[in-house]
Length: 124
Image (cartoon, rainbow, N blue to C red; front, side, top):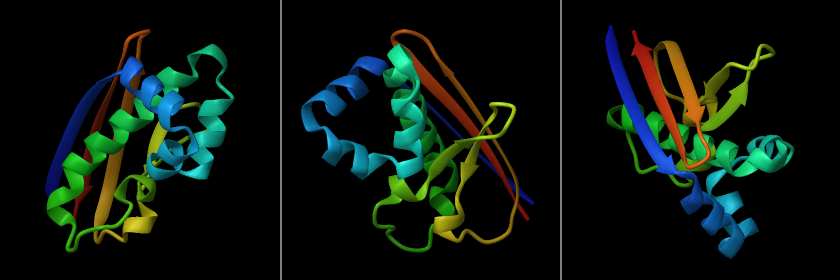
């Protein structure tokens, strides 16, 4: 078994500026349709949710990069952050077809100015 981890932190303002300046092109380059739908319906905290998902994608990439066998196109949109019914975030990595994943854990947190994500994955 092999355990890989990744962590990332980002300023919410950077994501907000990117969305406000680049609009749809930034959103479609970074987020899945489901993520855009979720974040756009979180009210005045939508930029914190976008930032948390961005941090998650970066943390996940750090944890799985050694397992990627080729240069992946659109890697950020192949990593999807969803929520379970109880609200816990989970990573959907099906589009990457990674072999032998045994378990994964994703944790997100955000404040007014920062978002952070931690990801752990266990490979068989």
